[in-house]
Length: 630
Ligand code: OTU
Image (tube, rainbow, N blue to C red; front, side, top):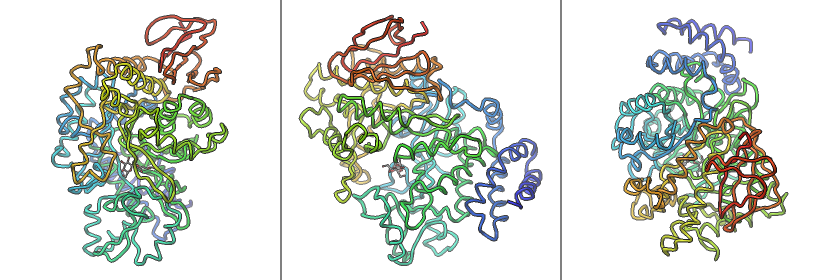
């Protein structure tokens, strides 16, 4: 890379010319610039104009640094002095749709006490940006990254929400939907009005034959909508790459102009006060003919390049990646050991999530245990985001190899789990529904809220008190394990009250085709009023979940990086795991009491305060956090 020293020197002198005080920028450039440049070189180094391309990209960073509000510059310094801030035991996330939780962005500020009760230290908002009328994938089709969907408020409201959250010690997380834009984003409109520069930001093809160089290898994501990943656009008279919905057009990161523009949007959000950027749909951002176009090395390089530049321009912000793919692929977005490979600092942990639901349906924990034994390890200075339920469907993404090692046939097992949660098997308590059943591949997923999948809805319909009790226990069990897993927990706001399925989406033209809306109900503030009454369902759930969240913020073993070792205790209904040297988490996945041998050393139950030794009974779906440290 012969030109790199001179190129970075050029960047440093441009910074000096544009920034009032360029020292910090230049220092950060010295630390992270070589890495950023190396990644850009990997992506775009073959171009004759690479030097210009790279300078233009660094100019975006300089411009963002020049516009960085003073309070956020201060935040940058504090976080650089405390670089492990996102690995700590007190990082507790909660997510919501702004309208469904609080009406508007500013409405969020009325609920800060509620978040405090749940020990929330970062609030993740589903994309609040401008989006097309009608279907817009819940905001995952972005028409403008710099303006807010008008009913929710304005970009200034977002800034002031960020500032108010920061004042309360709460960080702000937001989605960065960077694989695609909405088809009415200005770039897509300009492309349709004849701008070649904008057309080149997307992946379009003159003939269907050209799409066939890719199509046979691609995984259909929303097969209900279209069989493949391309749509014909009559205005462009071209085929447009659209991995997700027809109105979401994939961006072309092979074109450095896309990288430059999207970096600008990303740093704009950082300057609005975003602390944690959820990178949406990360595997898809780079395409190569004849491959699956998922998780290619260049997709990782794109994220690494973005990350290195964020460290220079807006270092208070980190990344949380979202990839719902093979578990080993999922963890690959956390980079590899070594500073050069810094990628996402946090990653969703879908394997834990699906394995919790799998163990609940089967009341056996061997696949959960094996999955965690084989695939929990991640690079230093990165953390799992442990959750029970996201806003998306659930697909059975355990590793086939892990199932086969236990003599479980993976696909029939997936079919069994779907049938169970769709409520089609006799023993099922669940009221989930099917999502994107693909007869061609046999793939199918499911939707439903935590409570409805855990049996609460069915039990309430039958007014069956015993079944209600079991369902409440199941919900607490799943949360009890996720919250006690090293990394950080992410609560689906509403799960702490037992939110049930909401079929009203069926009557909304913009939502009806997407059954994921079944599990995105409006937050029920009336039910939340009962949360302090332990005689109610809401009181039992909120009481247990808020207590566990509070407690976890005090237990150092729960921070990211602690060794996590599931035990074989000879009873497959039990999930028993050593978290660090002194914490033992034990969950009973059976509807009957099970005995756990606590051993000779007395263990203190951190949730109840009781001390135990020897054979200890775990009630149906019971959960314990033990400490041997006294
Ligand atoms: C994400 O999900 C979002 O979470 C969804 O809500 C969006 O619809 C989608 O992107 C498009 O923006 O396929 O079924 O491996 O699996 O990113 C959900 C990653 C999805 C994908 C995941 C995607």
